[in-house]
Amino acid sequence: MKRFFLIGMALFGFTAVITAQDISENAIGLRLGDSDGFGAEVSYQRAVGSDNNRLEFDLGIRNGKNYDGFKLVGLYQWVWNIDGGFNWYAGPGAGLASYNYKYRANGNDFDDDYTFAFLAGDIGIEYNFDIPLMISLDFRPEFGLGDSDYRNDNLDFDIGIGIRYQF
Image 1 (tube, rainbow, N blue to C red):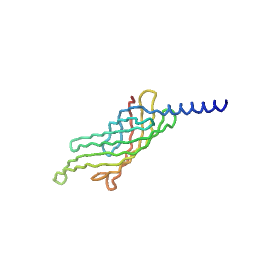
Image 2 (cartoon, rainbow, N blue to C red):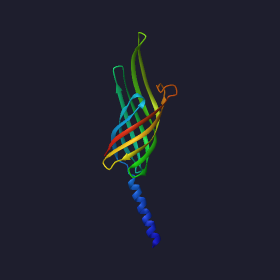
Image 3 (cartoon, rainbow, N blue to C red):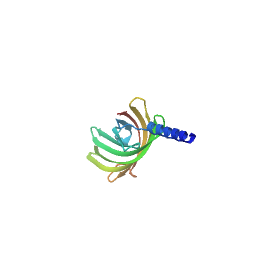
Image 4 (cartoon, helix red, strand yellow):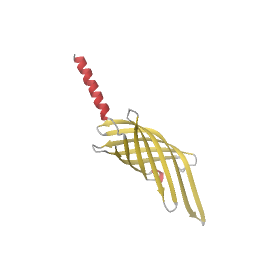
């Protein structure tokens, strides 16, 4: 009898831990980072499957007097609970970016256009408040493919802070 009671309590405890790790079905907000010059990005997260996995899509758009561009990245993330509302996550992704920069130097007009794809990884930590609000801090290395402007080694390290509404 004691054995069945202990097994039952263990299953109940395991079930309670699993439900404490649930992630929100949807979240939308902003991700603020250096983003290789794109700054703020609109961010959307969507839970997938029955596990704590999700997709994240971020879109950054910039324009000014001499430049304009966009950057779109998609990531697959595995999410693990640390304690209470704290989670950490990691996953791979890819993206597409394009920008145009017009400038004048030495009496000549220049028009630099770059369109490129990149591979990305993501690792971060997040806190889910009791209200439908989440904040996060993540690190996203990006490796540019093709005609990229990630300097000589085609590598960029992006750190961002996110704030999202969960629904």
